[in-house]
Image 1 (tube, rainbow, N blue to C red):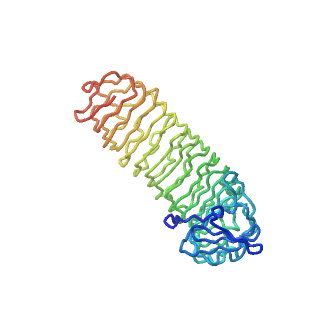
Image 2 (spheres, one colour):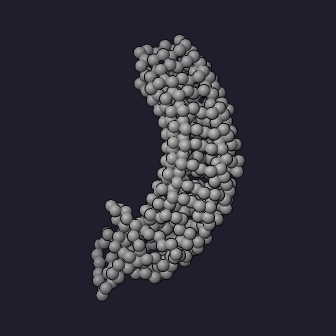
Image 3 (cartoon, rainbow, N blue to C red):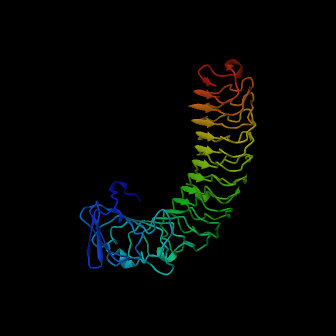
Length: 420
């Protein structure tokens, strides 16, 4: 939950003036916050205005005392315990009483560079908290005790972590009505069992930039309302069947980009409502017949930066497909009628050095509302009627070794612009 319109930065490092009363030091902020500390303990925060946002850079503090926030009504609090130049997590003593006064108002809490204790529940008073982010905390497991009292939590985000395994009960203390889980930028290698089976309201799940090399059948069972799953930048080598099942009917956005995928098993994508599918930056050399035929609502398919050598009628029946991206592959041949029946907004087949020839009827039956983008291939031989029955606004052929345009021989319609 972001309250950018309420953003007023209050940083301990940006003092306007300060005063010392005994061992207590108070720092006055330009956003009308007053931050008071006793030695390395933060003991009091007050505010003269009505800002609901506070960011505290507590690089030298080791604890937050009880009732520190009793005089403010914050909606969003950010705590940063280490300087960005180091990013090293530190042990900072947080207790439930540290957040007294925020029980009713605080909705979003972001904590950076905090060594999360295993056996304490410092957030237990924050019953209305809806979003918790833990970043650069070197977590080695999901912090169950930290989560168990957060019964209204809707979003849980972990970034820059050392968690290697998610077990069947890793999320057992998480609010079953959670809607968003991010576990990104870390060392995750294994997901065991069915750890998400009780999260029937989860809408978004992200494991971007981890080290997942395999997913077992049924791993996402129970996620009947999941709409987005992000698995980009991992080490997956195969899209297996039964990872996605008819239970995931409302799933609309699947990101499998930047993996090592060289195989898509038959029926890996069942009859579900996927609208956007990215398989960019993988190792696909070919596609199984009907690989995407069940995805009747698919609108965007990104196959860029693979090793695909031949394009055939892989896309038959994708009546809702609007954007097809096949840049930077190893395509040497596109079969006649490969795109027949498609009505697209964009087709990009660029940067394929092995594509020296366009065969007769390559684009027969294709309709494009905009540009047919064929730039920077190596196409020097365009066969007779390669563009016959193509409907498009513009054919872009720049960056190919072509000396002239032969519209009649190529079969280009009279209303289509050709650029070389």
